[in-house]
Image (tube, rainbow, N blue to C red; front, side, top):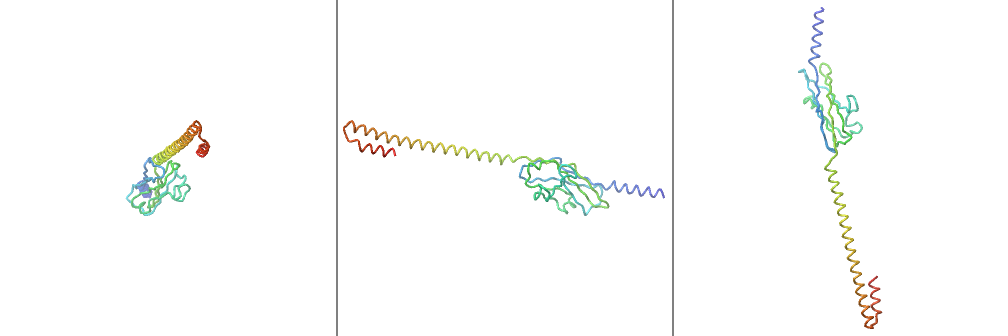
Length: 203
């Protein structure tokens, strides 16, 4: 009787040892602000038994921390993940984060559970996501602003130069009229008409 109980116990222990799940993640991934990034997560089984039901979850910072779903907080509308057939057949629990933000930088942990003869559950070591600013967009905006500043300065210089030429031409006309009036005075001619012309030209 004792021998039979020992055999059953060894069988149960052997079954537990054979049925293990291992979850693997990429240690780190980088992304540019506004892009889409894939956080990869796959699992393997130490037994030949295939499950038909299971689930996976992603947490931020620590296991059991804030969940990363399409309906949670700052991630609303920005998460898409592997469907059930991919999860079972391809053993994939990967997700995609869309329109990533610099504030998304941090650790992401994948947890997987599978229903076999018993529930197998495991988690990865985490993937650190590093989101950086879009240098191309900021550089383009910088060039755009620089070109506008240069254009504004050039336009201002052109307008100033045109105003200067106009004033110079106006003064030259007045000077010519003054010379004519002075000549008429010396020649004892009536300077009344030229005075009127000077006033008119000045206006």
